[in-house]
Image 1 (tube, rainbow, N blue to C red):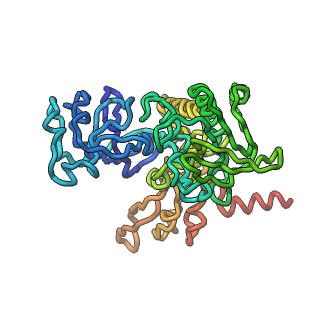
Image 2 (image 1 turned 120 degrees about the vertical axis):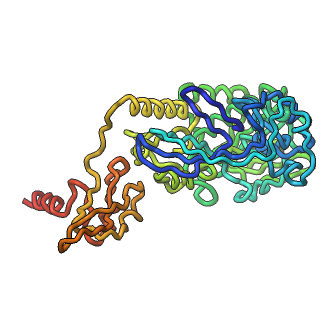
Image 3 (image 1 turned 180 degrees about the vertical axis):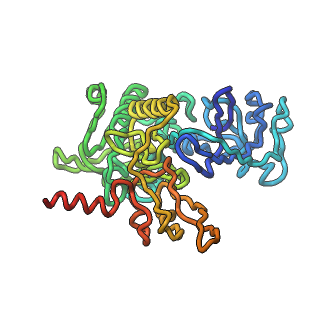
Length: 460
């Protein structure tokens, strides 16, 4: 997204980053860095004159390296609002100090090279995280597939761009190397997924179905073509998914159960060597194009975002939900919700369902004038607290804060620092209790005396 829009009740920040999150449920303070776009969006009409005349072309991130974009650009055709930004790393005005074509041709006078980053603070009641996913970098791990050296070995997402009407080829399936239409297309599933040795142990869930879709599109768009799918298992857990997979098979897609051991070039084509484990023999396919179904991984920077907001991620880097079955869209930090593949690999229907659930949770939260909280949270005995704040250092929810209290000692009023618990943030995990050397902080209902009483009752 490359623009910002305003609505009487909605503020949309794009081309921006969250730098700090403070506060608690109902009272979050969000610090946002609105990055300099070098385009005044209050003046820009999105006419497109600037990027049509821009002389600089760079590799398009949106088309995953399969096409070019200008140095002043809209990242994708459906961006709303459809207004550009300037890529300062490649714009000649910023790299060489000369050009200025976009400023000269802009009829609205919206180009502003002097624009700077802006720091904005907003107060919000709840946070929904929907950071999406990235693809596993197969070029670093799978040497048998050419380490990314063969231009006609692409990912499923690159194939999606080739097949899209707004993509670099106008929706035609063409080989990146020479622009020719492929006749034999090989699809390889589970590249990086379900591979503890070189990739990830988990299943990426969506790969089986989008590979079936891609095979169907090859057979439909390219007359006389052949589609080969190397797979470990076919997983179709969704409404009408199995039927669609069987339809692809009946249309002519050849599913081969087995791993691919090697891909190498032979002339202007690729030779794919694998094994058919059902027949128990090696298989060799001469292909014009090879499409890899690569694993979904957490998006870049998601771990840092989890640290900023104040909740945890799992061993694979996906955001942790409060409970996988009973609270799948909530986190252990009250007021923070999850939507989509930031929580784990999922397809579009599951993503939409989770996003709807997260929105409903926020609406339910805002519909109440009072909020019910968990009573079993930490409590500080200020009389014996030494103020070391070791509990603050270990608290994963940033619920411990320093507090200054006044005491009368020998007729004098003295001030000292003790720990204080923010009841809106504390989740009762007990980490602070274990860290407190003085035993001044306990979780309500789980003090030493109460736990011992429970043990005594069990022993009777």
